[in-house]
Image (tube, rainbow over all chains, first blue to last red; front, side, top):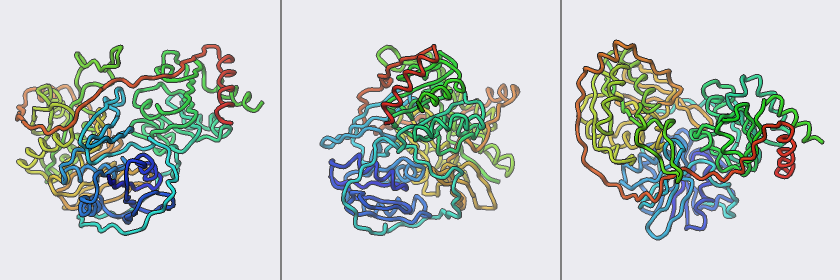
Length: 293
Length: 245
């Protein structure tokens, strides 16, 4: 079996390669820059970052016959390419999977459905697969690929400008501890009051969709949830997060979940290992104080 | 004049959906609603019409129940609607095929749709429709500008925003942040109820998928919840010291 893996993020590409390693040989496509050391692929096809998705898709189509499966990271451009390839090849596409097993001709996958309320387990003859971010921890796969340039096709899309988002590029997927805040934190200024907890635990600050997207108290790249990052830290501390299913879908793989919320009926208490019904600003300083002892 | 086709999805109200003791979704009695990003897509389409002139055509691939979603779309400013029935389950390739059949029959300069729907979340449709029509896709836009024949968007990426442009006809997929969908006034809602909906039947299925299960994920958390803060703090500090060391 031979795979072609693709992402526009080198770390995501490492995750995908880790996911499929042991299942067969693989080459990779990387859009943009990144250190290929230990990527494990036979060949790494490189594509300049400002290449439109359809030009990349056409480049992949030219060599798609060489591969049994195309496994693509679910980022914006990844999904666009997967949709394009899906139409052009007619291959069924298993999307947003977080579990993959291939036995014989059948592809066994799991993905969230109904906004994260259920998990659909499917068996299909998918040849294209999109992978949700953060479903496995990336490993060093030893070998470093041979580099080639992808022979891209034409496009009528002109990409004119890239703007980095505020907050830079935090890697929640790699964090061992995440302190995540929800609407219950109350204001942007209040986040500073719980940051010492993240610092004391060598963790990262993250937030729910309302905090990152609706109110903008944190940058978008710190959003955990179905439409944000899927994280799997050793410890996930949810502060003032009610526990909407869309949020749970992003942190379900955390090892230990700790929740602090004023509302004892908050659904997050059904999804935590340890919880305290109480005020964040009373509880967090107490935890910090005792941690230092 | 810019004519817009907007792709609309009707979903069950997933916030109201519950699962039974075995984890199976309980779908009977759960009301339908317009999918979240479809509302943003409709709003974006109607704003283009208001600024540039032209017509907005709504297309739904769903079931007979889709008439209510189409009426709501009319109330928001969609001029004409095609309801394609025959939806038998989530399969983006089938959805694309059904929609493409009718998209090819109408005149449009821009096709607008939501980037990823709130229920199935595949994110496949923008690429499928773009490839199917053979026209550029400007994906995940939080801003759309039209200048002559050129459509310019800002794409929300994972770590960067990307400005890109292409000449019409184009497909544009939108984010939730692009706009605040309008709440139509009562009079418009009443008028929308009387407007005709063109209904078509799509027959076709090439699903090669067997669903092994569709269940609520099991949570195996300890759920030790303390109402006495000090007890909770002591336990949590113990756990943190063990885990983080």
